[in-house]
Length: 473
Image 1 (cartoon, rainbow, N blue to C red):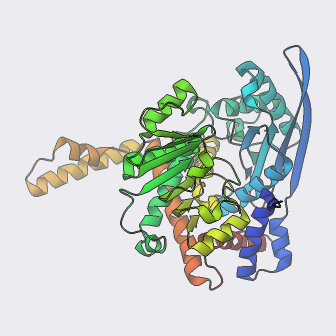
Image 2: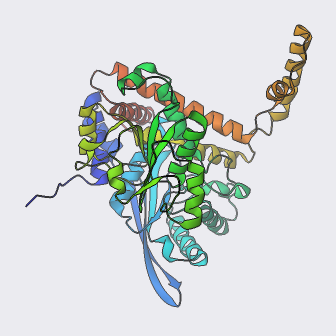
Image 3: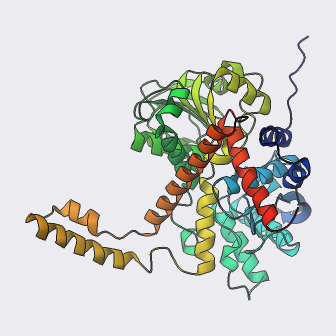
């Protein structure tokens, strides 16, 4: 009888990957222990009357690090949530924020619930009650702990949480900054919904700006024409696939979902598929692709780029050896287990790790938080000034050349950047600079041989420096 393959838990996998980086950088073990430890974990259980009966819900909020404040991290609603997962995700957030130079500590929250079983009004009752517990116990505020959307939550839930905080703290003028990922008309920021998917795109673009890195993945040239498989067409997977296919010429040859997979070597139109899913709540019967029942098997289909954007532990010891992608970009948190990571590295598969790849969400959350505490939208002070300077520049060009500029060129020169332009610019710059720092670590640290270890070494170096600066050790 074949023995089942036993792998580390999600949290253990994160710790093992961090330990690999700590060993490579020869960090003092006492400092390493201080960085790795989770500062605090809150578990709450609370009753809510649903359809005439009392139901008791259990939730968690983990704070991994407070070396920078506030601590930042999403809240997920899922029937599989547990404390181990929440602590692992909180740790990832600490490292993620450091990698992209977002001055937050790491935190994460979860509620053990299947949101599909409850209607809107019931979810509002549950969310407000959960928020009340977190606020009362000091695990939610604009200055110390700021949640955001995650699996099973979105703008709606963030608006409910912010309103609950406002009623409990009516004198806090920064109340709207107690969560990010809010609706635009309730203090949200343009570009936040698609931020993680857009960050995936920017991260892959930066990888392809370095021909030697592309060559290391056994590819050449630009993104145009590269084949890609997406696992998970939720918010992150949808936006990443949409932007890569529509703006960069990437061919989406397969989409994997819970109920199977769609395969089309000529390319799947992501927007058409998204509309199909919205209407029918399934990928089945989509007319422009072949349906395969075994979605996990499609992970092993040959492609240039594989983007797991679903859940953790999708590529494991059982299937890692069969993966035929040249480049894997971790859009989800922890989709590759520690053992699978080692197998893929030995095979020469290049992995752009989650701690960097999906940092677009927390980056734009940071922009939203800054916008909220500054009480002014981006671009308000300088947009019209930039337009005036643009008109002056256009006039100078026409005078100097004696030719009149076309309307399209003049509009491009004279247009002032609005909030969405600035958010995208800031996100693009963040992903570029972070990748260059990771790449610099990979090139200059003799014991670092892959992007994941380089990412953690880069992150831990920054955190250790922060601890030293404030005198923790």
